[in-house]
Image (tube, rainbow over all chains, first blue to last red):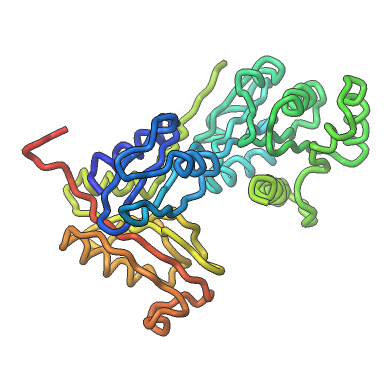
Length: 226
Length: 120
């Protein structure tokens, strides 16, 4: 591998561009292929490159000149945490360690601060103002933790209208029931509302904010991988 | 939209490899290319190895890293990439096999710095 290839991979990751590094295993010949450009020198099938980019899964493909290993480097999954609360202070660093790009959203003064969330993208705005700009997609999870319908509801509404792979909302069964009624009145169907995980997190008997964060992150990862 | 982000999306192992290169160290990169059974690290996982023996990242749960570092040091010297296979079917299973019963293929390649005569 030439150092400039390595530099190219790292530069693409920093810039958020998806690339595939193709390596012929017999001699180490390489080509760094950007998403959207035709596959190249190593006799590769464009479909194989496209599949690697879509799934993010590496694969080895046969070519007339031997086996070629395709290693996609695609953008990490995102997690939008609504509510810069105590649970979020545990959830955000754990999600970052697990490889998520995390955005913390809270309009309230003093909540979404860099002191409380080092290394996270912080958005001090109301969800109805910014969820469109954040554009949740099928590699984005959204979890609402404020307990305050004025903040949680607009975030959940935007999430339900998006392709988010995971939607979760903190709250007891009673709170969830009231929320379902409010969102149902806005025209969301029972199937839509089924997308919201609530009470949030896997049932592991979590009690502390930190334990709840573990349960939530496990559920998010399950939704991404299973 | 007001954001404050210090996120860096670069793979820390690849970033470490670049940092070592910048310090003038010689570096190899090991990559899991294929797994069978209960291998602990997925295909695509990287481990960077410097000529000083320092390493970053992992290609297993710790069972084969020692052997991979040895091969990486040879690859740094020879400049020629190598493929490796570890697993219960490997003849070295007793020494450096995967206790989990999985099987992995690895590609170990030297990272060639730009020639000083042709700076980027």
